[in-house]
Amino acid sequence: MNPRAIRRIPVLLYHKIGVAPTGVRNPRTWVAPDRFVWQMNYLSRRGWRCITPEALAAHYRGEKEADPDSILITFDDGSRSCYREVFPLMRSLGLTATVFIVSGQLGGRAVWDRNPDHPDDELLTIREIRELAEAGWSIGAHSMTHARLTGLPPGEAEREIRESKRQLEEALSMPIRTFAYPYGAYAPEHAGMVRKVGYEIGFTTHYPEQGLYAIRRENIHGEVYALRFLWRFRRAKRGPFRDVEA
Image (cartoon, rainbow, N blue to C red; front, side, top):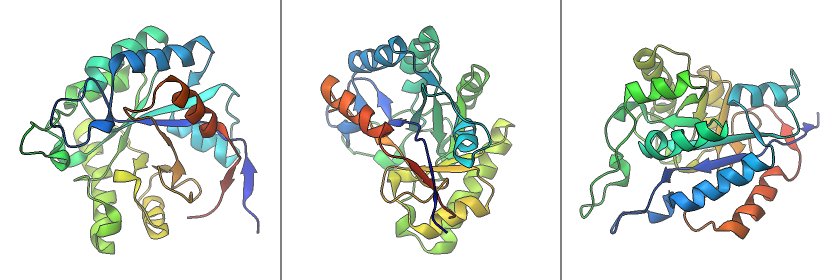
């Protein structure tokens, strides 16, 4: 049976908002504050409205069609810049986002980005995550350790996916229904694991998509200036989403 084609909702991916410190391991994951302000103002002025991953899943399942001006904005890793830089701006514009948390480093540091010449980036605390959730943000899982799942044996990969959900639900006392693959890296069997352990929806940055359990996102990194942002945003809306089984 051919997969069902559905109107696509744009999904954007960010990591950190701030000036990339000298010597940081991956400066591209940092988006300068003035550039991020311009991007959010652009979306707000044109009437784009943020939805949750659950609303996106309902749209793609054909349960409740999303408005044509819907968008999903996501942040991977759970940098504290989400609370310090992003939250005040987006709240002033009436926007919300989804942040994917590495469950084994709640309130810790991004050890997967470790560089001996630079301190690890600080991560959101439990209190900050709860405050974001109370303000309408969505919270998702991003594995236990930020491991590249495609480099793990199947049992270890499934444990990263399953235990991340369990740990976050226990720590935050809230259901965790969404998952984002670290580094965007996944194989079809990982999409099946995400479905098996009880997530409603999963996100990647790689192709091809795998139905609801590996939806593509447009990566907005530090080298995405205004014209490139407009181009990437248009690409994020391009083509239908095809609903297939994981």
